[in-house]
Image (cartoon, rainbow, N blue to C red; front, side, top):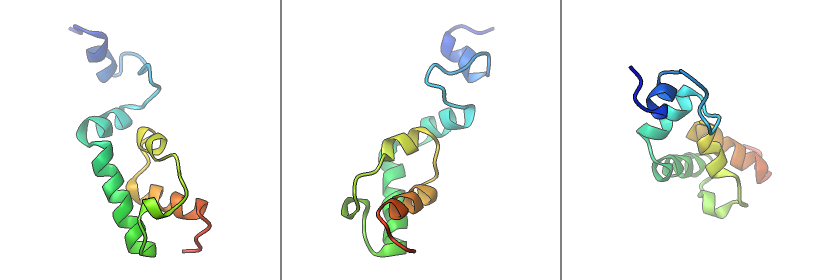
Length: 85
Protein backbone atom coordinates (compact mmCIF):
# COMPACT_ATOMS: atom_id res chain seq x y z
CA UNK A 1 0.00 0.00 0.00
CA UNK A 2 1.23 3.49 -0.79
CA UNK A 3 1.50 5.68 2.28
CA UNK A 4 2.70 8.97 0.86
CA UNK A 5 2.81 10.71 -2.51
CA UNK A 6 6.58 10.08 -2.55
CA UNK A 7 6.03 6.34 -2.14
CA UNK A 8 3.60 6.39 -5.03
CA UNK A 9 5.93 8.44 -7.24
CA UNK A 10 8.87 6.14 -6.49
CA UNK A 11 6.81 3.21 -7.70
CA UNK A 12 5.80 4.94 -10.91
CA UNK A 13 2.24 5.63 -9.74
CA UNK A 14 2.25 9.16 -11.12
CA UNK A 15 4.63 11.66 -12.64
CA UNK A 16 7.24 13.30 -10.46
CA UNK A 17 6.23 16.93 -9.85
CA UNK A 18 9.72 17.97 -11.01
CA UNK A 19 9.24 16.07 -14.26
CA UNK A 20 12.18 13.74 -13.58
CA UNK A 21 12.22 10.13 -14.74
CA UNK A 22 12.70 7.23 -12.35
CA UNK A 23 16.33 6.97 -13.49
CA UNK A 24 16.93 10.64 -12.76
CA UNK A 25 15.32 10.34 -9.33
CA UNK A 26 17.50 7.31 -8.53
CA UNK A 27 20.66 9.09 -9.70
CA UNK A 28 19.70 12.07 -7.58
CA UNK A 29 19.26 9.89 -4.48
CA UNK A 30 22.45 7.91 -5.08
CA UNK A 31 24.86 10.78 -5.67
CA UNK A 32 25.34 14.39 -4.82
CA UNK A 33 25.78 17.31 -7.15
CA UNK A 34 29.22 17.95 -5.63
CA UNK A 35 30.39 14.42 -6.48
CA UNK A 36 28.94 14.71 -9.98
CA UNK A 37 30.68 18.07 -10.54
CA UNK A 38 34.00 16.62 -9.34
CA UNK A 39 33.62 13.90 -11.98
CA UNK A 40 32.88 16.57 -14.61
CA UNK A 41 36.01 18.48 -13.55
CA UNK A 42 38.09 15.32 -13.76
CA UNK A 43 36.85 14.63 -17.30
CA UNK A 44 37.49 18.23 -18.40
CA UNK A 45 40.97 17.96 -16.88
CA UNK A 46 41.62 14.71 -18.72
CA UNK A 47 40.48 16.14 -22.06
CA UNK A 48 41.79 19.69 -21.89
CA UNK A 49 44.03 20.12 -18.86
CA UNK A 50 41.56 22.61 -17.38
CA UNK A 51 38.77 22.61 -14.82
CA UNK A 52 35.17 23.71 -15.20
CA UNK A 53 36.11 26.92 -13.39
CA UNK A 54 38.42 27.80 -16.28
CA UNK A 55 35.54 27.63 -18.77
CA UNK A 56 32.64 30.03 -19.34
CA UNK A 57 29.64 29.41 -17.10
CA UNK A 58 27.39 26.53 -18.08
CA UNK A 59 24.14 25.10 -16.80
CA UNK A 60 25.82 22.38 -14.75
CA UNK A 61 23.04 22.11 -12.18
CA UNK A 62 20.41 21.77 -14.89
CA UNK A 63 22.46 19.06 -16.57
CA UNK A 64 22.79 17.22 -13.27
CA UNK A 65 19.05 17.48 -12.64
CA UNK A 66 18.39 16.20 -16.18
CA UNK A 67 20.54 13.12 -15.54
CA UNK A 68 23.37 14.03 -17.92
CA UNK A 69 26.47 11.93 -17.26
CA UNK A 70 29.66 13.70 -16.11
CA UNK A 71 31.39 12.64 -19.33
CA UNK A 72 28.63 14.14 -21.50
CA UNK A 73 28.52 17.29 -19.36
CA UNK A 74 32.27 17.75 -19.82
CA UNK A 75 31.88 17.42 -23.58
CA UNK A 76 29.02 19.92 -23.61
CA UNK A 77 30.99 22.41 -21.52
CA UNK A 78 34.02 22.14 -23.77
CA UNK A 79 31.92 22.53 -26.92
CA UNK A 80 30.16 25.58 -25.47
CA UNK A 81 33.58 27.05 -24.68
CA UNK A 82 34.59 26.53 -28.30
CA UNK A 83 37.13 23.81 -27.60
CA UNK A 84 37.86 21.53 -30.54
CA UNK A 85 38.61 18.29 -28.67
